[in-house]
Length: 344
Ligand SMILES: [Zn+2]
Image (cartoon, rainbow, N blue to C red; front, side):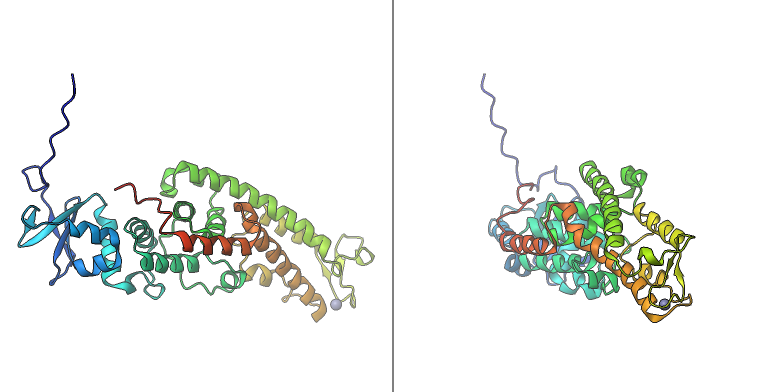
């Protein structure tokens, strides 16, 4: 027996239509369309939405007030998106500064607008979000290490940032999102409350963390081998410390230095790129000639650069130039490569 095709459901103005209430903030006095998500209605401007999104444009073209659910003369369109995410998208579309760096938007706002601006194909909003995310997860050593970041949202979810970078193809933010995730212990990475990230992403973060420890270990060894001035066997004292080759003014204490390096290997010094790493170890509190201090300081800066330069290799890129190139390619194709356009 053939199954009858299900009768076409009446538009959602039947008795099944869910009751909804006006959103307290996003209800434009001169709006001309009501978007309902879950039980929340937003009154927005068709013109603004349609001008910036062909998806909204096509949607509104099919709205017929004679057939559609109507409220106080305004057509109602029901969407499957979460009300909270839609609020952030509509807010960003009507008030662009909402997601600009200078407004210091929360991470959850950036995530929501990234997701929906991709789905609704709102290119300039997408670019604005990518720009903001790229400043939170910078791709240059100077932007990170001298603390030039515009801001770091208090609710930043680093592992979820890794997931966003992969889902929405934003390679530029990937290395530092991974790096920041590495400060979670494995226990924290596995714990459900730490992040909104999937298990797959948590697993990737665990692997990155392990690889980062290996990378730091190698960088420390290479850095020692590369610093010919400080570590000259002829100037090594019987107690193992390294005497200043310039004038013997003081000695670099080997044991505390190795302790510090071991803390770096285990990722318990915190941010290895912090200027404090170089400052705390530069010997400026100790006696010593300028040449000695300069070399100690350079030693730590060289270490930071070694680790920084190799970070992209832990997430599938040859170097930072390759990350930049991948980002440029992503921006050129983003509207064709739309990961969430099909989940409406
Ligand atoms: Zn000296």
